[in-house]
Image 1 (cartoon, rainbow, N blue to C red):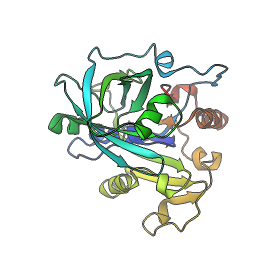
Image 2 (cartoon, helix red, strand yellow):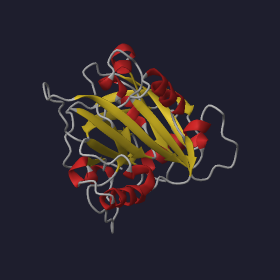
Image 3 (cartoon, one colour):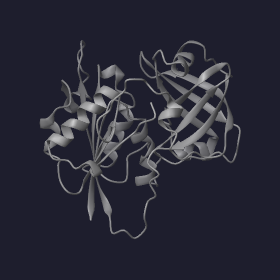
Image 4 (cartoon, rainbow, N blue to C red):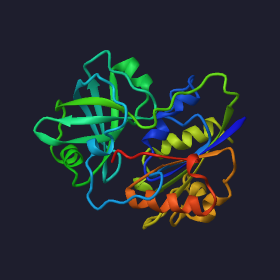
Length: 280
């Protein structure tokens, strides 16, 4: 049975990571195996009288035993607010699968970070390199990355698993389609947009994306114009994709997750078809 996967969100490292799972002969950063809307949402209603830290939120998630040392070998600005870290991994036994994140340990910083991996497992296998995309916030690990991290800074990593999902063999599923709804303040904050457009061109009809911008001040470039909508992702955008064969994945900050989670419930999407992250 063909499956539709919808991604709805503000960030896309996971989407890009997953492409090697769906299309293993290509080195594209990623798309999930089913067609679905990816939104980082919490299953149910999020309540946060006291903000839990990363380790508390993910205490029940599986983690690998291996903790590896890593050295920063590259730092680039993906946008005004996001840095990409390129990390050389010391431990040859360190591995990860598309869809996983890392606990990020910084010497001298007591708070442990949790960041999505934005590179493919293939890059780690070929070059011993792992990449993270980190948005600037006041959270100590993110703040350190944006204000103190330099080339040759040393950190430690441990892989965590969001969903504990094991891909079944012989389950009768055929490759479906992937629809990404990706929202940001403006087009400069749409990270990896060139990679996404490349995937759309490589797999026409199988991978599509609608970019949303909420505070665009400059003219949108011609390449992006056909794919950009001004304004937030709405119920009208999503309701046309509701079906029994559609899975929904949500990724973004907690208020957005709560909003989209309620929206999906309002348009009749059952809770067991909605998947989310909770490690922030």
